[in-house]
Amino acid sequence: MEGKKTVTIVQTGSPIGRKSDQEATLKGLGLNKRHRRRVLEDTPAVRGMINKVRHLVRVEQPE
Image (cartoon, rainbow, N blue to C red; front, top):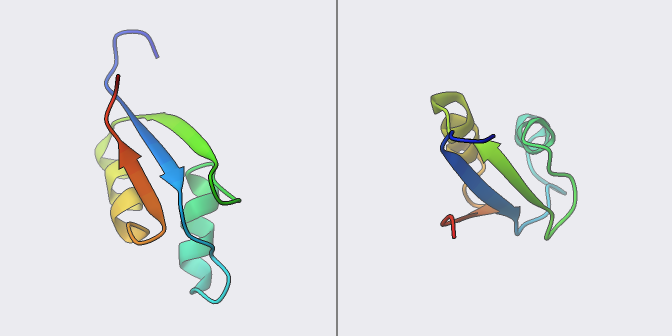
């Protein structure tokens, strides 16, 4: 991802007891267990997915 804007997300909440589409969104982001961290390209689609599960993830600033 050289030269592209990225966003780092960390899963902070569990999908247990949540709607199935929220669990599927977490899997689409590459997250399936708490405290997992992923660096993804910062696109409108990824931002929309983050917004959908914003209560289950934390967005970290790039270093």
